[in-house]
Length: 428
Image (cartoon, rainbow, N blue to C red; front, side, top):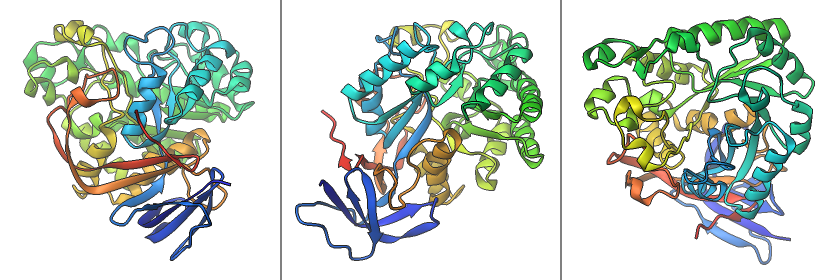
């Protein structure tokens, strides 16, 4: 029997409504007990967590690991090291690899690589359509048998309404969540940043918020029609959030995630960072009004999860003019500190709500193990130091990606350690 006692920390577990100083005993990969003054079993390891926060392992439901096919940007190994360094014990990885994860063989490859590098759990997300071409449904059953936990064509929207309807219906047979990259490409056109005052000032083609809103509105009607589970990836506009809020009141099975960059930056950052391609992502940084709406959605419970949308690119790809650069930034190693500093210490939301958004909520959205420290639950644990100060330095990232708009930011709060199946994670 393997046992580990985490002693004296502030245990925050939204799934049980806990926020108090308690000891946590992990045995044989699961939570055994929690309480005050627990004694370690003979031979148990002990971690002194006094001054730290003990939470269910953090889960990032939107990550691009790039393998197979784009290992020069990221690998499963480097991505999982970045996850552990960032305080995450699990990630859900998107299928836009090469080949696309639309079949058993690709899913199994990703899981084999993850087993070789057990720094965090990997939950593969399969494609909705074969080749992400939006023409024919992928074989959901085959992928579920191999280990996928949801389906998405992320990187591309499902444009065809009939195909989306069939995806929502088919996914119900496997209790799968259908994740949509909500974007009307005809409205997006050749846009490279949010359409508004700053795109006009900078002379850059804009992407209107309506490009997201109309797709979300369509899909919510289809989710209501089919009874399917629908999740909006990287939601970025106030209108889309209100659509989700209203649909939920009608009983639609909808959830949504937001990213740290859409919570903390607006389209003005493109100007402030002198057209840096590190401010280019999809959806684009939106207006300050949208930022404020998303922050309100965190506070009122509309938002289910915070996800990084970790999208590493090779430095040479990003080191070009703004309009030519690929969309996307990295986030696994900055998400926790950004949220602790700007959201918790900034007074936007209390700590238990943040843990819900980073752990309990993500587990609930995709039906993943974890998200709770109740006895019998998987022993994935994150320790947080609320007072540790860090400066974001991309040269120290475990990820191969360095593309972040937060370089140089000084932040208060950081991950201190992670435990996976009851064992402390040690990075090489």
